[in-house]
Image (tube, rainbow, N blue to C red):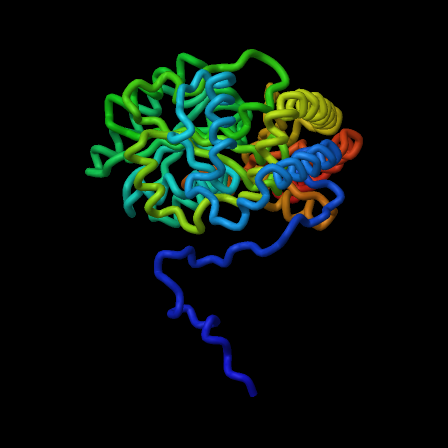
Length: 406
């Protein structure tokens, strides 16, 4: 009889890793997938990406015989610097930029470089669960701050800093998704960005500005990046190609002060990002990216509108579940709120049995104790007809769960 694997024993693992097992499940293929922020699969520019890779390999392919630059392919970093100057009024040089795998690896590297166990991180009252997982990995004391449709409430932010200080704890970092916030969907106003920056500068707190959704704008005017307003070097900026091309390209970037980048370079594992991917994305971005973003946003707007219409049709006469929802001007998310007594985790479990994936709000709560009656709905993947149909099914599931909970 074979012996149990050594790796089945808990004491073989580092005490610093999460105790719960990670997921090794790929995209589910569920008929109604509103759970993950996938883009429209039919809009992926496959022919253009293939041609861009062919050109890149023809021009520089023999460079694959060498390890890539530790900070990433220099021409792509030059393009990112130009894009940030043009689109975000952010003045950085290519040397101020490190490429990473999407936005998650840059976030991971920044958090690893900054956080000690027990130090406080402030986030929006609901935020991206991937970053919450990274923060927990490094033992951060994560505290959500109340928001409205303009971002952090100024008094709540000040109160959170005072509260931590009164406990003898240092607030080390503020993590924010200020544009088309995940999952709440709002855009932080310029006044709130200035207040956030002034508060961070006054208290000596770093800001991690995760701006990976900023290009997915359907309505309204751009608001300057927080980093573009920073004169004291407290903001580190993260962006990504994953949301504007596809998560599978696994390319993003961070831009920040040189002292921080030096320390990130010391802990960055695996060398530079894939040179093969960087060659393709660079050639594609230079020639096609702006038009692709405009086209993709037209598609995403139709999908957002389909979800809003489906929610109105499905929940319009269901006053007993108290449904309300956000109306984002861009991004990939709608935030659904039901009456306090409705358990959205139970709704999600029931929906999964009926072929639908949604993301319960409690999983996006920094403290894990709020959002029981909320859910994040992603509208990027399914066709408009399927989205609208799915919202009707979701409304029925919510009504049955509301009745069952009485």
